[in-house]
Image (cartoon, rainbow, N blue to C red; front, side):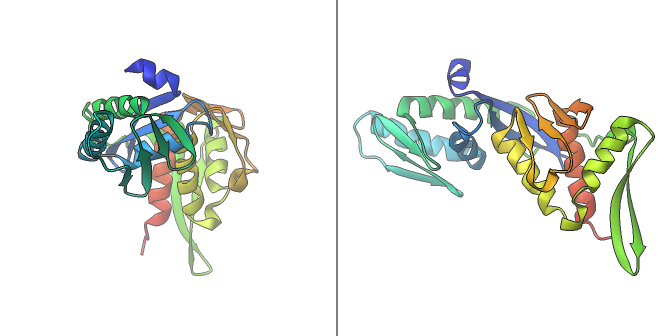
Length: 230
């Protein structure tokens, strides 16, 4: 099944957030295959995928089938020859089925989706960063403080860049990483920082850290700024 994933530039990965494992899909072909990435992220249970495959098999066999399949907020229109994925991607139906089968196999492979994982409480210490909260003029202010290392200072500056906007900016960034993945310069809310995501690393200014560590730190930061200390 790796051939079909290579054909569409798809990569299946696990990442830990909020103490649980999350199954994710990315594409190295930025933009071109984003619709199938988003579609798979919404089809996040084996039962949902099995139902779609059942309709595909009916279509391929010439039996009655449901042409429009919708899971959560993503839909696809299937026919015996082609499938149109919401978002503007058309692909052979047999390819769509192969991708779903590969995704099902990944969903069934431990660690499972939403499985509790050991908490990496030491990671922030490893990078020399601390999350702090204090009241200024009666208002709670949350910020990140880095040690004297260049890497810690870069991470802290990055996390503090848009904290006034709350967690929304960071959640949107995480969503973009999950959907679009690799070799991308991120601007918008983070235009003051030079941030580039590759298939294995996050580069913040000149600080290079593993992508999985960066995702974990971002989720921890989101959890921290969304939690009231009152």
